[in-house]
Image 1 (tube, rainbow, N blue to C red):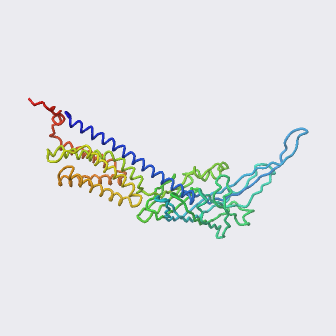
Image 2 (tube, rainbow, N blue to C red):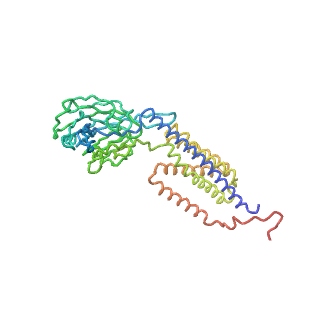
Length: 456
């Protein structure tokens, strides 16, 4: 062959492309496992309870206004009774919530779902009940109002495990449903009979609600008060705070976290929207919330997917190391066949498959250590024979160990992965340029004389 260097380069390039297809297939497998994880979460939500959002407590009063009106003219002139039904709502002037959650992990096969149990103590105060005073809009109208009720809405009522409500120290009877047209899921309680009539506008109210509920993945509170304070303590060490308002204070440790929120009605329109008659169109999903998600930062599928994104770069750096060993050894090592390049590349691809499968049964760090150690030992042992030197084989294995260590660092340092990766690549390129600065590339790529011809 007149151009052996070019032929070998093309063969190795084709090998890299085929390995890229293998890595893509492993990537599809990761996506498939992620979809199974999502199905496991959905399965738990369907049979247990989903993410929980809590709204309330609020005071509500159903009223009607009726009056006589003259309609028609002439012989068709008549008097008929007309009626208007309306709802009055009073939001607390102060809502102070103390909540605690405990992790309650659920499994669907191999897949873990982050569920939780929670207890919330809601202390609500109303400075007055002027918002519940019905006012006639027509002259000589008659007003009739139902007893005042207090209600609390939840996004998934299946998660309610218990509730106790007390008004000024007096226990209330809890019933299902809220009585609200659209925010119907939750609970309600009717205030004592002496509240049914003659409520002064300046009446102050203090209500305490203790709610036990379970949910999956996330917990949120709607700031439905003029001033909302929420203190949340949890044994989950990896919170992700979301919603419309971040905590004013937070403490996160290995054994859990504590977070505190403080929100004024000046910062959210929720209290006004609830008092407004148009609030019938409201839905919990569209309201401002204080929220936390119970996430798992060491998600094996996310980390495996990120690792595979470095797969081709991993293969390219390894092949470049082998090629440099061939180029710089000057006959001290054997020539490496393209098939041997392919076997080394397949080992690198199998590392990602091993990582994915082992991480479903072991902690990710342990799975990574086992998969990387197995591949380093195999590649180091094979390189001894591929390069024809024990020393070069162990050096190659040490280089692979360093490469796996660099990859693990990139996976853990998500925020600094770009700068670490770019600096590492720059360093690798600098080493290649330094080692090959004296190579005569024209001589290396020159065609070999044909057989039967003599050099003149």
